Image (cartoon, helix red, strand yellow):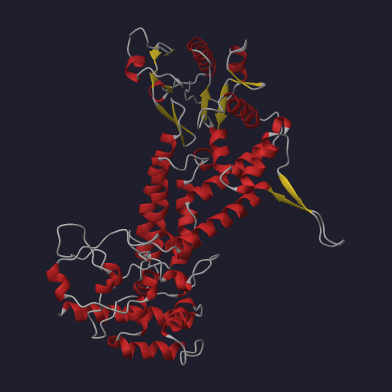
Length: 514
């Protein structure tokens, strides 16, 4: 049960409710929780709560305080009786009185910014955080657009102003169950922020998006925060209430091993054991009596002058998670994906559209949008330089979309073109021919950047600006493409962005006039 009260001293209150009232938490008894001007009275039964309310009334009379009953609510945890019946006058109803006024029972209650649900689930807590995050996210997007911030400042402002609202208490609600439908909404929110920073559309592959930002799925951040909380509680003194609660959690885990997600600790265990280091840390913790551990790994000195170093468990876990995620990311961007759609083209369209009989090998049997991205992006570890050094928002977005395979080239738009049939949309890769030249070649990123004659003059300017850092002569088209896309000199990056922005404008003007 939960009830909000506001008062200044507790000595009188504790004296009035002595005699076993409250909720036993391992070796402690909890009667009331206080933080600033918020408080929660906790009881095991309706009779106990009424006794405590009466004691509160006596206390308030003594100190001439007034409780606003309309803003004071009661919650009964793990009671499946419909709320309407509880608030009615029927046989299953509860009637809690304070100074002659009946108090209202609720399904959810926000205490210290955290939403509690009477069924004990975390769903309302997560929904509330998503709602709060979206409210701040909208303000952040408006400010970023008006101030025309670069990606680095957008990201910094997001982490400083938006993230505190979104991930508040994430160490509780982000401890696991990452496959749930509700958690997918959390990841959608996270990806929405990433796309805005880069200025790319919804269809952008997540691998490229997170690769250029050096971000990971939010579950990685959430699990790390939960693990930090887990180790911090483990290091606490036994007298502290939080550690007493961890003892209760461990008892629940032992008694409900066959029930999935029985408690916070069971969700954490399941999430930790997805990683090799996490499994090792969990086994050590679980097999230690009363989990009395420092949660540190000793690193022996490499020389007599060095000192013994202690590495926190959560740091080892984060390193392991990043290593696993990086391996998964690299496999994702370099994977060869056969066409999932059998593009059926009508006979009339087949006769009218030209075909490239020498399609680049990287497109053959590979429908992965990141097949070109994987040529120049082979590792990660920092925010891509182009997101910082290009002051023009349109030019920066043009480079982002070009890198991530979602620009307006036909290699991408051909997925959605009409094929003259009543079935799925899209035409085969070999028919996504460039409409701006007579070379009869697929309009992919390589053709657009280095081959199409329409952009010859712009291309010469790009080569001239980049010649100090890149040797173009005597190299293949593919080698020059990789060099241009992977170079991290500001001059080359700005020249490349300028070329892409001007070339796309030239292309639009030409095609709009056709």
